[in-house]
Image 1: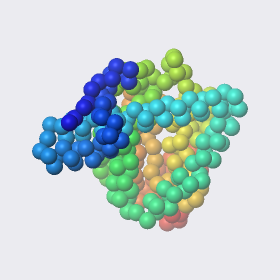
Image 2: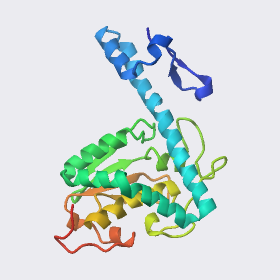
Image 3: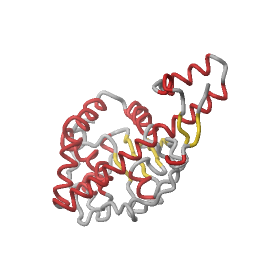
Image 4: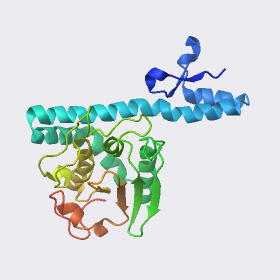
Length: 253
């Protein structure tokens, strides 16, 4: 029996209120069970609920990361925060991504990235909606907004909470221009990891796996651009992070 009810103390979002012996079952297993038993309305309700179920913890962790980065910058200096962020990315996380993506075609990179970003809960309804476009020289994944930096900059439309740049959050932005902030001031500390996603592959193989179309205007969407040929990546994407563009035919992609 489906037991979904709004929980006022959780911002009014639905929460499963199953009996204790069922509360630990995954929602995916309950969806399959409902389908098998012909309870299609229950299956649909549970499928829609999975968005709320996953989004809550995801949003909490994104807010937490930006808050921690702000505290590090305030207590140890902005450069220390930048170094800590890049240091954590360049070990297992981004290096693993880089090695894996080198074995993929550009189309496959877009497919796996779309899977990752769907689970990032972007889009105006925070349901993971993306727009994928073939722009000729590159493929674009557009997030309007992305489910982390974009959502936090604009404010949370689902939870009805304000921009994390405003009270009570007041999370930090770059006070100086760094290569890790695309040499811009005013970039949210959280968003610096997207610049590192470019810088680290450039160090390891000469080319970024993708580039970010970042705008200081939080109302504009964020885009990741996957160039079909690394040699076609404009030089400006290298110089904005203080890196040289490899000569044609050089570097790994």
